[in-house]
Length: 394
Image: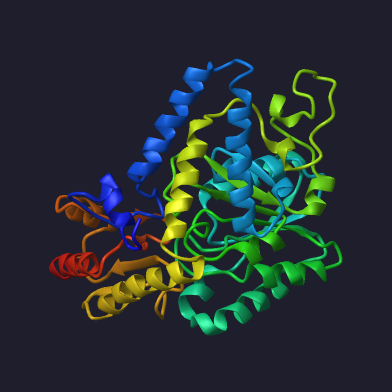
């Protein structure tokens, strides 16, 4: 496939202008065909026969290895999951907690992860503290943000902090967090807190190997920036977490010997896998990752993503009554902004009105704003189309 042709392989991009890659990426036609072919092969071999298991095991091993390479870790540190939430929650609940331990959670985390931490705190008698990230990411230039985040971490860490929860690429403001530097700081803390990273927006959009290798829990999905099928993701786990954590939701895939309930757990990340899942999705994700790789290395793909998000950010500066959350061009593909002033339509109303023009972006609740995402398949003409529509609304 010639470089730059990925867009033409995505049926979802026909007849619409799409800026919701952070919610779900379009599935390329070859990936859809790979899913269908895998399903057909399984049925031809027999869905529960001795002939099918080598085929299934090969598909599982191939995707686990691909994801491990992207994360800069060995395959034994990768558990396959259905989504980001399960990748975060299953190992989180498998750790040993003591009443009074503190969870330090950034104020930019997704409600799904926050709610899980709140329930864990309720059951285990833990306390919750907030790491102030949102205001910093919106007010400080990207070249000074790492230092500001580390200063905020220093001021909010306590002797009771047992885990820090911080996304790699913030789903609301679009800022990138210095995960590897945070991990290094936590190693010097008396209790060496665990680091849980929501990587929903980073995998497939920015290089992740350094951060994924440094975190204790680095959970991601295949259906956003990787443009794979929904229902398949993974989590990279640290060596110390594998030593310390026990499985929580338990099934035959958690066991070394799946036929015996008396078996010990897998010694690697597979102990956090549960039971039957949709094998053909693996072929779809592998296909999407192959197609992305043909478009260039992660660094070169990020440069193109930033070119388009920078074009959008610059254009938004010229629209009266509109304010971007970030003070400078985005470090990745998420661009969040507000329409201000008396009589300005709500974010939800803007989404509805643009949707009538087949231009798709989304509204967020916290902060209450609009978010548009640019990927390598976004064109300069599409960005200009969105800017023209926003000028008309503002």
